[in-house]
Image (cartoon, rainbow, N blue to C red; front, side, top):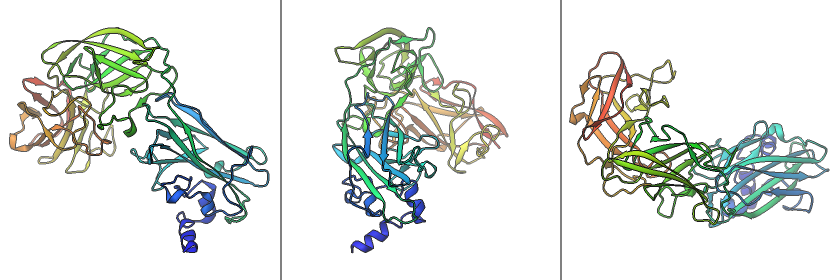
Length: 455
């Protein structure tokens, strides 16, 4: 039985030598819930996994939520010629769940999913391994790999790192190699310690996330621009599955940053030093909305930014476009042709719509839907409850040809977003060319200069 399992595990990747030089096959880092805690010793022989003092070291420190950091794996073995590793980060409370995400390092490391495919892994577990070309020692008998890790954006409890490494003799077989491992080295979130001074841009600092309108809507997605919002010099951070709150909703604190809208904490899904994206609260009428950025919320070192007065309304619909300016081709999908609905001059794989095609448009600011709170994903269809209409090329689409208009459903919480709306319509007979598309919610239309290509 042991022999059969051994042969199976060692034949997952084609070619014995390649299977070890690049740190694959993945799933053998020593995680108890992966292959029963198996390590590289499942295939390589030459002694059991060891962590001899001075010969193998994983260097990682407690993390600032959402702030990218580097860690390192060092192997010192003068008897061997090639060095490889695989490392993963898991939640201590559930080692089947990924903690944070890894970033590949050019010419040194790669990120692979559990199925061996390159990352990103859509919230699934990740492994970072060396590239085959990086297996050679940088100095005789020594190799240090640098790994870039984006830690969780919230305090998810302890994070456990599992790593298994091989120092190989390079004879083309798995025999006579040395295996090293660290099983469950723990780190935790450090106390929030942002030191910036939040400041809004002078004009248009709070707008809707689709068209840049200065009016934000109930439950609409918004964009804040300015400075001093996050750790200086750190890349931006987008919420991951493990950052969702206990109910599976967007958090109201991400990367030690929160946003108050009229004194209420709003869901936040992206933070950087200059930009914040989130979802608005409910607005009973057209009114002003006081927006405030808070760093290290609730801590003794909390930093409270100034107030910014934005305009708000129950409904302020806007369509997303491929152009970030909110103009040009709508960010639409042709379900009939199974391709993006975009001019081929901008996207060679784009298509134009034909009469009768089913297309999907995406927008925000279409207003609140009963039963859904800010930050909550629509796990199933949630239609609009207010009157709406769709016009393409000056032709109003008949009600029977509007198959759906409402929150974009996302049972996995990975593809769409709270506050994102989808509209599915059948294309009427239209002349060829770019045709303007408008969705009117209540009596408020989406922005102008948004088109779809028609053939």
